[in-house]
Image (tube, rainbow, N blue to C red):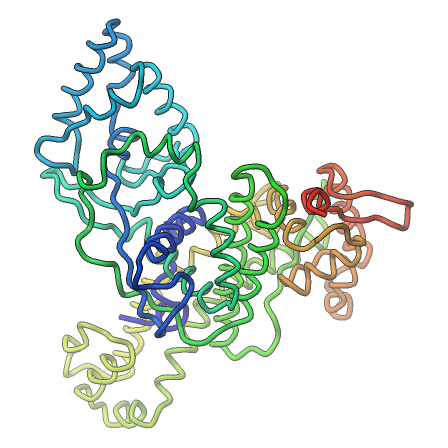
Length: 500
């Protein structure tokens, strides 16, 4: 069935974390940038994305399917003996490669076997979610450059390789389509080319672990089927602008990437909730009450919890509204009134792409068939997309259960730093900073943004005043705020100042 997908796109999946979404996106972008028949960040026709990713199975076997490496070093002291013993082991254990995988190219590229081991230790230590218990073919090296981009795959016991949509579920494809529609594509491409697409010393190290491209097994067919509901949105442009703000900070090396991933995760959550609002036909805007951690529970704590719970229910409400809107059509109402199951089957197939619509019992009541369909839709939704708000919110430091029984919005330092990089071009008066966070992201932190709660007698003004004061103190402790007097404080972006 296609219900979640029609509202939000194909597809946003809870097991694809923000970092994995970004890695999938990089693979898509680089594949298209290398294709002479395509132009990066240009969508010639809506939802016609087609790209050819990489497997890089030699690299993945070496880094993540190589448990005997330490034993080889301990059990053999001779350099040549170590190489030969390891080659023999990998000949039998290398998975997804040819029947006779050949790793001998490595001996010409590393002077010592111990140097080879040190490189592997370094790359394992910097791997994305490297300490996870995922299978070896679903682990990913840090994106130092083009040699690090590859897709998630499943390798069978017989050695066959297929792409797997569990951890690269297409959310990275949706992200790419969003940025295609942001009108910032050329600027973004320039930044990615400078940071990640031009070979550098770290990328060359990763490249040294891989054979010539002609020896690499790779997918034979391009990946297709991505879908994002049509049209442009201000959200896509806001995401691109935030990325450009971060890229243009004078940050060393790859320090910008965690901030890029964090703010992308926030915009994706906003996209999900905004689409839910539109589907429900709510006229107000998405907001988040953010509690800056306090030793005592007060009205801000309660509202941050309530705000989280309200937003967490939105996607299921949107699903029900979407289905109900379809069912109000005349042909649906006629089929229901006549209990015409055959017509109902056709409508389920036509409006929701329900593959097993023909299995609906011909003797069943039409209203019951619709209720059962809703139950199936909600069950499917609760397993995946509904969880994204919780999983991604925790991953980017937006929500937490800290000091509470319930999850609420309470930002961590990483998110706060990211917000400064995205919002402050040099320095900004603190109250203006709070205003900008509300305007850009719907964050309610200080009393000026919380007026609706005072009018409804749901909060005390002093609680939000102290909430803002705690954020001011947090920013100062992070070196991101300077007080000129008791009544004047400025939020500072040190990296932007360096650039000026």
